[in-house]
Amino acid sequence: MKVYHPIQELEATGLVIAGTSLRHGGSSLTPYTSLNLAEHVGDDPNAVAANREIFFQQTGLADLHYCRQIHSAEVIDVHEKVPVTPDVTPEADALVSAQYGVTLGIFTADCVPVFILDVATPAIGIVHAGWRGTFARIAVNAFTRMETRFGTLAANCHVHLGPSIQKCCYTVSAELLTQFAERFGSTVGNGTNLSLQAANINQLIEIGLPSPSISVSPFCTACRTDLFYSHRAENGQTGRMLSFIRLNLEN
Ligand SMILES: [Zn+2]
Image (cartoon, rainbow, N blue to C red; front, side):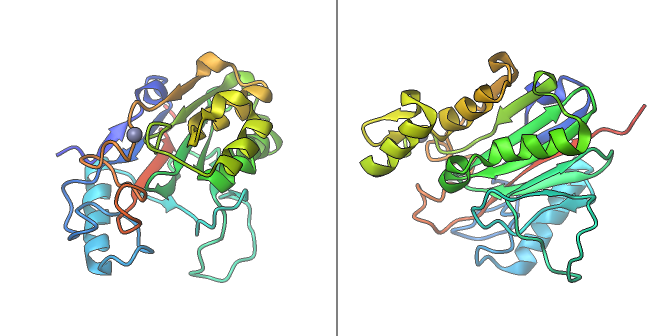
């Protein structure tokens, strides 16, 4: 059984394996049915461990780096030797790397997973962009860190916005929508329906990312709870998908 939805736009470069896990084929029970990969949502830890084993076995991935997500705009370069207490997951909402074999991952259930691939360096980034992170321009922060650390140029980047809640299902207060429209332009929504995807796209285009290099998943998580978890559609009690990206081995 397929355990993840691949991102063809990124995998077609031959440089990475990248995708978002699907919710079936695991051992978690309702409301986490069934391939929940996150430990922090109240699911049985044994079920999560078994699910991760299935996922890593099926994908061949290893050396997963992730962070304790706090809806911030913080970015971590996984190779920077930050003095951290062992076994404490660093708090942030984005990860970047230029090393082969290292898997970067973030967990979502409606928030936008933003994948960044610099095809020239090459280097990778992954971002957890909910409304707070999107509003604080976390995707731009991740790109800026790649620029500083690896010399990444916007013109060499491919960006993909993975399965996430889309405008059809994402209603917010009129006040919040107005704030988003003021910051990212009127294309971010209408009435009380907000497009986090448009807000992320607009902020990336603003810093020079070519719009043809940005792709968006056709899947709205709230519309497709048969495939993905949706925090909104499942009243806040559900599992999480893992979105991941890894540079292929040098050949
Ligand atoms: Zn929808």
